Image 1 (cartoon, rainbow, N blue to C red):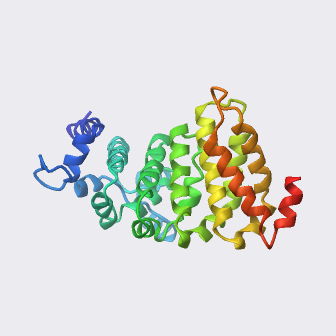
Image 2 (image 1 turned 90 degrees about the vertical axis):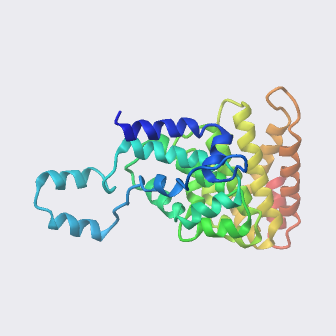
Image 3 (image 1 turned 120 degrees about the vertical axis):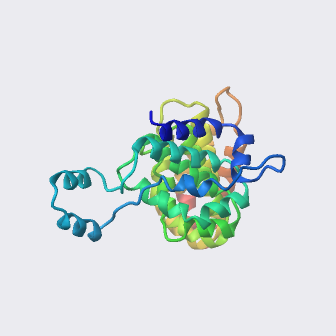
Length: 295
């Protein structure tokens, strides 16, 4: 390792501890950093080259080696090791649920940079998962900050991609929890319902698992709470939810709620399913259709 690589690696290990994260972000009163190191850390994130400008640059290059390098990655000059470590450092910092820290991320335009890196197809799986956890952690916040984090980027499909990308069960549940947090804001519900097909694909993927362990029930509980939130929010969503098979999903949730990991009753899962069904079958628009599905 070079000295710079070693420093980045050691920083990642130091930030595993909450006390160190708070000192780094300037949140700890008992001890402060010599200066703000968040901006220097972000300088290790390369620019993502996108679209026509990249092709124009290629045409201007004469050296074959440079051209080959451009084709291998659409990222600007960077050290892959330091990039991966920097991404993980920032993801660790997002664990501090402080509006002051989140304001710093926003002021440095970190969300669009991370979004572009996530879809650049030039980072490894571990870095992609760390970026997704960054968004999932930061979106458990106030409406105003959620608005700023989602400005100009499509975060909801990104949160629903965790299972397709074979990320860990913790990342899947954390991403779903962030989506539920977004859905609880009235101004964002229509945006969430717009991704109902992806939500139902995620629901069905979890319900089709053979192993019913704690991870299964965690995901099922958040899925059910999310659908219940949307069902109770407005009758405008009911027609789309009925067509998507939400009533049938609630019935499956009720079935699996009867026998948890240790044969216990999953009360949270059961209550969300009951409230969701009640909202749909009493709908003035699609009540009869939902009742027929229920019967």
